[in-house]
Length: 261
Image (cartoon, rainbow, N blue to C red; front, side, top):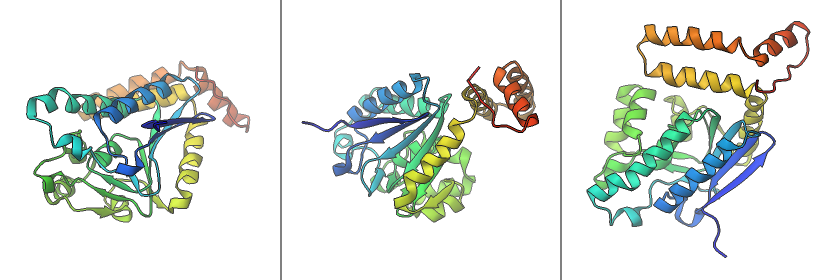
């Protein structure tokens, strides 16, 4: 029996997507990428799931980049119309998801692994995690959105150094430069990640959806337009029952019961 490329689990309101190719450090082949897409869509379409956690199988690798054995045989146009188009579509879907996404990085996150990290909302790293955009050492450069997301999320000079030199950085350094949120022990990684996911999942899924859209859309607007967008979106939130439930619960000194309406 062949092990599935992607594992899916739902715990309460949290969905867990695990890339399951530990023998090749969870490298992203074309087949793996498409399986990831379908699993992510399944979790997005599950109304019971409010938060999606992405991790890798085993204790050594999150995602150690693209599958080099597969990439070695690619030519430009085929790559452009096939794998590159797929990886941009899948990563953009993760980035634009209405549901909160958390990366639980359990080891190497090289190349495409770091590029996937850049698409998630929150990033928790184990102490043994190693991150890099090392494509330049292979005569390539990041092509799964890394050039554009890194330069927007990090100080431009830091992003350029990561891509121009291609050296690996530690989990602690990744947090220091703003690439990730926190570092925990490997043994605690999923416990800490799921505890955070449960806290977020307890909030209104509808309000989280509107908040994520406000953040994503506003990031691509000039400040004046983004502020007007925020004004409109937060006003829309006042039409939800959850907003009034949250305010009422606070005034009544009780825990709010959000139902996503």
